[in-house]
Image (cartoon, rainbow, N blue to C red; front, side):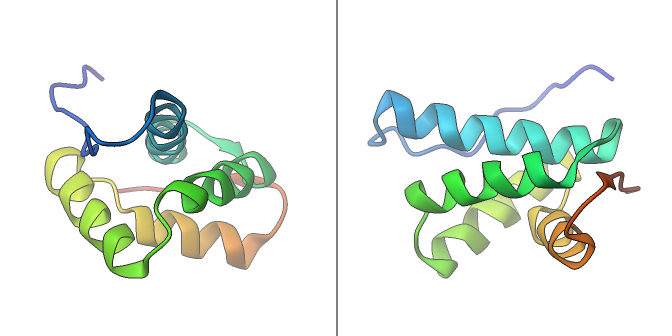
Length: 92
């Protein structure tokens, strides 16, 4: 699938912060387009949360990302947390 959208990022973030957020968003995409290890996904989410600390900011980014990609951050995190281990594979 060819990605024809831009990621919701904050230009005031440091390069490391942007990298962490982009890595997490890529992991969300991978959960929908292929499959990933739940532990890898949850580790990426933990790093993401060091950048995006507030729940309201996470929700805003989630809405923006879902609008452009069709992939839900909320759903991916919820399923990964419920599973705890194994493989994460989601459908739109």
